[in-house]
Length: 171
Picture 1 (tube, helix red, strand yellow):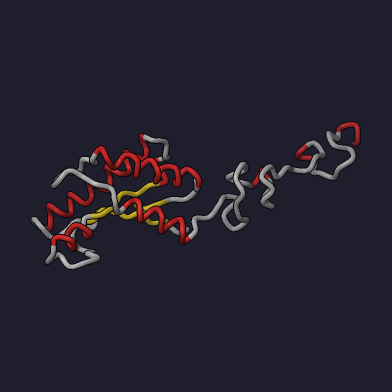
Picture 2 (cartoon, rainbow, N blue to C red):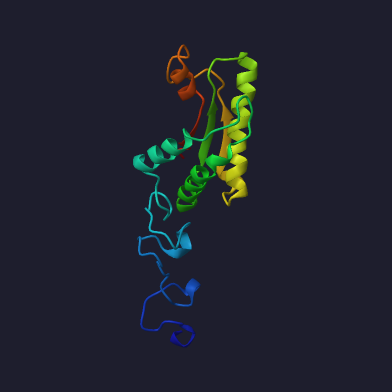
């Protein structure tokens, strides 16, 4: 059988012509089982890097600064760099899935704010997809005015409540 063995000096399965399966990135997950064979990851995450708490915080620090035209779902031009930074991070964690969550302040009707938050979350998803992120990894959700992080009684509070959050979907 050594005549059929592509690697007679190394042990390997017949399914791979007698050669051992490679582990290109050296993370302990063989390429045949590695969903991210060119990036160091964990066995628990199928060979892909895991999103850390610090990365999740960075994503949300960026996301909360995305600006929209008043009362609209149009992303302001000056938010392009922020979104590019977010896309860059998402590309590093290519098997991770995220919720893109839109929130509003309490000015206007509850139903209008619900639609606005959904539309803004969808606008962020659409921008990310147009810039190389697989749509299947992103879910747009709107929460309207239902989850304020500050009082809506002050201008600063309302400004902070108008936000987008990016949250890792845990498997």
